[in-house]
Image (cartoon, rainbow, N blue to C red):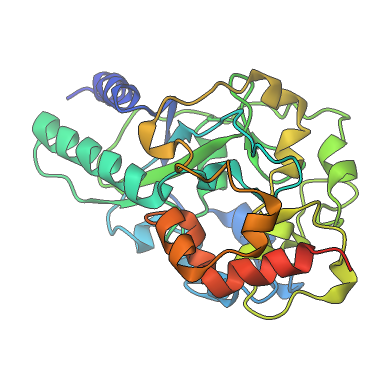
Length: 309
């Protein structure tokens, strides 16, 4: 099948499954990105995320993940919502974690896309990824023209801002490849100035992961350093600050995915109720949720850290 026709049919199928953007890149080693990643790791900016040091060759070369790979397909899926906690003093959770774990929801859709490809062209060798393997997803999304990597190091689009999940399919089939687009951050530095822990470098485009609120509240398993007391602005799981202040997110649109809607009771829970959260309530409230990653003990550590002395 002609690669342009195949690319068009795939886009149509992906959009019918809810993906709002699809891009195609040639599967090849990311030489420039490899140097940047190596420098970032050598500076220790990944904190205690030791897994970032693993499988370096696979991170920079998709053919190490799928032998004979010809294409990296990047897909974006909206999760933006204007819903907020009813109690303005309640600890906050990142929008992406309001509903069911996106890993499971998107993996199912990617499997449908793989099945669609096999129906169209026969045998296909490929793998699907949703933020759970050594794939430089933002770099591939940038290469395929989905958006640009902003000063907050998050992929941004002119059409829908940055509140979306990224997913990839790496496979041994050629497509009609796309190209990167321009950077539209300009002189804006709202994300840099708004970050309460100074995780974003003064010039932007460089993140000290070990200072990010999301790192502290999700990745870090040790005690949170007291030097960051009173800087979290009530974030107990993740952080949306650098996205909330981004001017491009004025174009974000409310998602319509049932699985991503807030769990019943999540936004109705008051600050006092969060502080007195029991294990049983935690398990019920966050069943099939990405918040499970931090576990009950981790979430309670975060909540206690937010308490005023």
